[in-house]
Image (cartoon, rainbow, N blue to C red; front, side, top):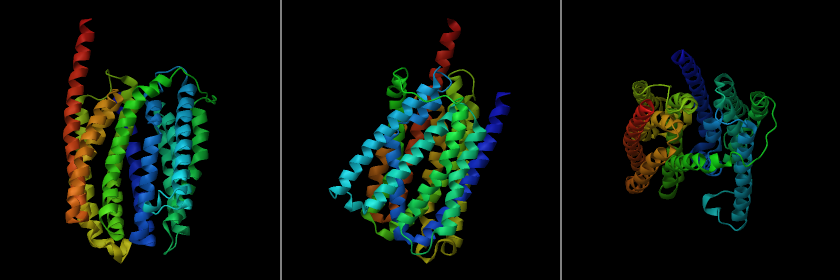
Length: 419
């Protein structure tokens, strides 16, 4: 019965991720073609800043909600505390960012007042929606979760197709991302209220310790992971031209889409493992099979992506994007390796072992940063190859951490049987 239910959840979430990936591919294709390499590079930097800011100042509250949703009596307090923590932090960082802009500290990044406002707005909207997504995942309401995940990507694609024009600036594309997030928010609120039985959120001291203990561990892991994802982009921005930045942004953004089917599996593994703990859930052999299957699918996806860029890159993106397929091939080993980390990381987080995930991300990051900086002497392809090195190192550490976690679980079970 468990495997039948999980299979249904895996398939529906996989199909949704695949659909969203296809929609995202179309959106990125249109945005990059209409903006051109230089403006798309600035757009990618802005989106990377939003993602990094959200990772830093969300304190992984959504993951805490998912992990403890079935373990606490007062869910309204669990969710309310998360909202209070996240939006207090976002208000503080928005104020600091405005002061930095006023003092001229953001001029190097070419972020003006309008761009800063749009980034702060998008960060707040995405954080709000992510908190409500955690309610659906915590309650294992995968149908509603999958339905709502489609809304913003579809809205963005429609707006880009109808409103974005050749020669527009990165601000225009960023404003459409904000509008797409706004479109989805009322639906998130409506269904989350039903999931919480119409209960009003409140703030209390009862569950703050969960955010300070488990939340701090998973926040640290997510923060380093986000830095790992974005470090190569900023290395390219520092060492290479604006055109190279646009090329890498396109290759990296499309390559990360290859992770989406695997993230569909991880999306289900995390709440399922969180709800059953050490007992129940998928056994080790099934987890390894999922990991291997995901890595094979990622390998085929990256080869397909490289072929598409090689054969149709100019027609899809314009004449300014020749050679992007070489960057995809340089990223291929790393993207495939990290697709395995995605599966094992969800299991470790569900077991409450986020400290192990932090170690995996930290090891990968500390290999990625020097590898990409050293690779910069060979140009943007060298930076992409350096990123792959870091991801491969992360896979090795992830397998080691998961094997050790499995030994601990077996020991835990044996001790429990003895007593």
